Amino acid sequence: MSLATEFKQIIVIGAGVVGLTTALMIQEKGGFHVTIIAEVHPGDAKTIKYTSHWAGAHHVTLAGDDMRQLDFDRATFDVMWAMSAPGSPAEGCFMRIPQTEYYSVGNENRGLEVMPNYRPLAENELLPETKSGVTFNTITIDTPVYLNYLLSRFLASGGSIIRGSVQHLSQVAEGGTRLFSGGRASSPDAIVVCAGLGARTLGGVEDKDMYPIRGQTLLVRAPWVKFGRTVSTADGLWTYIIPRRSGDIIVGGTKIDDDWYPNPRPEITKDILARGFALCPELAPPEVRARRTPTVDDVIPNIIEEGCGLRPARKGGIRLEIGSIEPANSKMKVPVVYNYGHAGSGYQSSWGSASIALQLLEDALTQNRGAKSLL
Image (cartoon, rainbow, N blue to C red; front, side, top):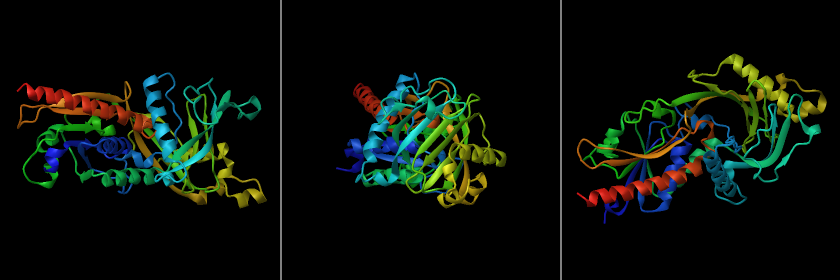
């Protein structure tokens, strides 16, 4: 029996963390052959077109009262905590750390109470001009390493990936993977759209509720920093320190809606460095701190790069639903599952939202099988 008749042929559009996780979960479920189609792949040079490369990332939910988002985040944390366990094949992608959050406007820790070793901070532990805070254990993610881990695990499980640019869903609905490899067109059994910000312009989707939240960061070499810190201020600024297992540190950041500028702004870099050092003077080398009081200038030689990314936000939150598209060469509609619009929560909600996308896919294929039987 051929591969085409043994397995349902599924195309996933997008190879960011959401696309990779969703494709992997579907592939490992069994009964499917999944092909990812993406213009940019995890091993490529960093580009503004691919947000997942620029993420910090750490798992600190910001879901608040959004129970759906909180469920996604908690499900993902459970998966990642297990993946980060000593001896796990994925251990090298993660770092387990103590995390401290400081809040300048009330109590913003909703959803974090279930984290390991969670406790509120005492008043004498707070930073100046902050009103509350919490500490707990979490994980950070070395995002370039993790993305390639997901891809390698996906390929090892039998999945495929193709470099290609899709202008309209109808192209892959009619041509399938042959659109890029040549040969006779063959419609897939279903399409899963994980296009991130690209969903705004992808034909057949063109979701105008999508918009960017621009984030700018610094990557600093400071392997002696083994903890995370975040402070939110009354004016809406968030400053964060995210250490990676590699010894590199993400220092951020900014959250600016509808800002499409693709390059780091020098004045923002200067501001992030000043805020980051104020929050974490331990960014300065320990030998400097042993001799004298460090300054921000002591951190500058260890800056690896400046970066910025466009978080794929969506009015109304993540889109997780079923649709369809009818190819020009067939009267049978191809099911489409949408899984995009994660904003800055792509990593920390990836496994939770992928689980729902898989359920929607199975439901859509069952419905489609029933429709075929009526023909």
